[in-house]
Image 1 (spheres, rainbow, N blue to C red):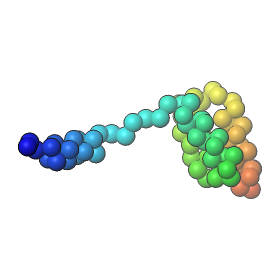
Image 2 (cartoon, helix red, strand yellow; image 1 turned 45 degrees about the vertical axis):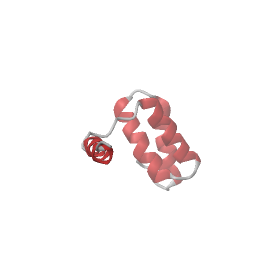
Image 3 (cartoon, rainbow, N blue to C red; image 1 turned 180 degrees about the horizontal axis):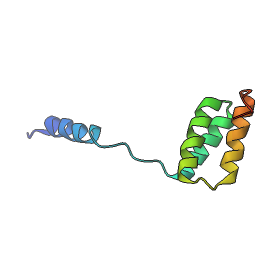
Image 4 (cartoon, rainbow, N blue to C red; image 1 turned 180 degrees about the vertical axis):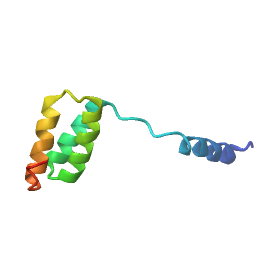
Length: 77
């Protein structure tokens, strides 16, 4: 019959101990824009900042980040 349940548990435990996979820049940007479009500005700000760490020269991300702060009434950031 084998020990399939034990193998499944061991595989799950190995995956649980692996570091989380990094999202690529395109995924981060699209996710941030989605949050912004849905009025989730705190989430968008967080993800835009993650994106900007990867692509600091991408001006559009800085612009959208500024728009998020502006929508929150924090235009001086």
